[in-house]
Length: 341
Image 1: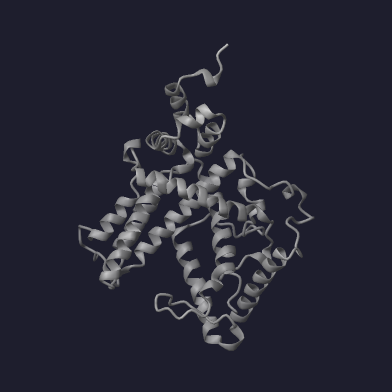
Image 2: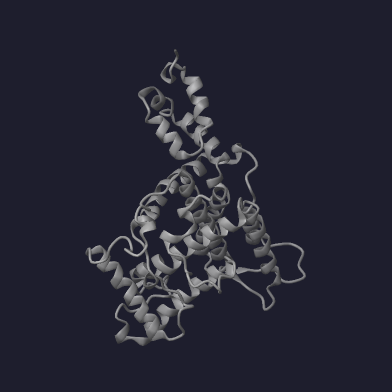
């Protein structure tokens, strides 16, 4: 009776192309020395990954994200030589500027595996492994209401600063072992310590989609807008429509993006925003004093910094109206990714 290690390398290579994910490729490669030998050749490995990435649903935003990041690099290089905002198209003009055209092209979907360049594949592989760090943070502990900070919570600057201090203090207590990983009152979360294949697919897709929307927002902030910017609103609408074409299950995808967005921008962003404290670089206009009590003006700048980022995110990521729900924002351990149905 033939077993898999009896198959010739050419057949094993074809099997790789029918696997479902990057993880499957690596797991299969570690099965034995013969399967590992197949992917040792770089050109074969890249072709296998090209096939997997093109057909895998979790990578449905990666092509647009790669193109957006490439545009990001081009804009940075241009602004270093010419530090002036781009001229935005005026209403009544029937052609876009060169930068608006390039932005529109970033949202084009991929029609064949041949469109994925080797550099794209390598970037995606690095991104896929790098986002495991974010996944580990997501799973590390169950977050409570006090672990989120949003400009929607209060219009009082001092209350905002107090909530910020509470968030940072709770994180330090967790690091010191004074806070449990899981809430004793929610036993259904105690075993939520790793993502299965379906959850990892949804997590990666949600993160890359939010990342893609943020890249679009960043590009649009580099334009000098006319008083009437209906053209730019139309560009944004067209970009969002193209991205929505990649949606698989509309409600579930939206919930996943909402959970990931809340985690990154209402927890991680304020938690790690102190890296900008006391900085003096002209390239960091939203720097602020780490000791808020000594400089209320800098405290206001921190509020402005957080508000600006949150506002831009909300502008680009319209969510379902959950105003009637008392459980929002979603905690990572109670979000849709805990279930595959």
